[in-house]
Length: 103
Image (cartoon, rainbow, N blue to C red; front, side):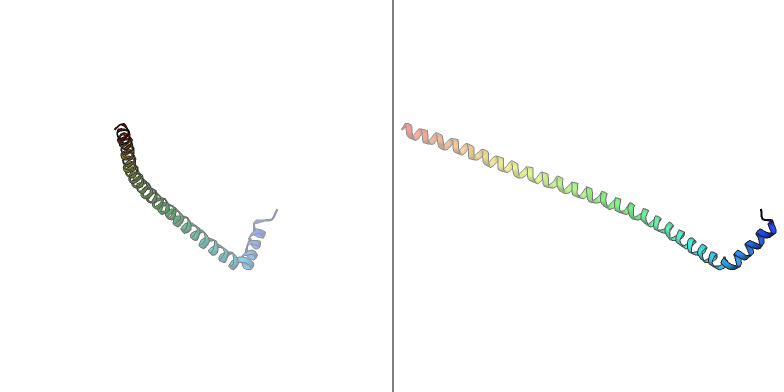
C-alpha cells in the first residue's frame, strides 16, 4: 500500500497535470446541471399550460357540440312536423278523392 506521503505526492502531481481541466469540467457540469434544472422547471410549466389549454379546448368543443346537437334536434322536429303535415295532407287528398268517386 502507498503511504500518505506518496498519496499526497500523487495528488499534487495529478493536480498539476489535470487541475485546470478538472476545474473546467466541474464548471461545465455545474452549468449543465443548472440548465437541466431550468429545463425541467420550464417543461413542467409548459405541461401545465398545455393541460389547461387542452381542458379549455375540450370545454369549448363540448359546448359547441351541445349547441349543434340542440340545433339539429330543433331542425329535425321541424322536419318531422312538415312530414306529419304531408301525411295529413295525403290522407285528406285520399278522402277527397274517395268522396269524388262516390258522387
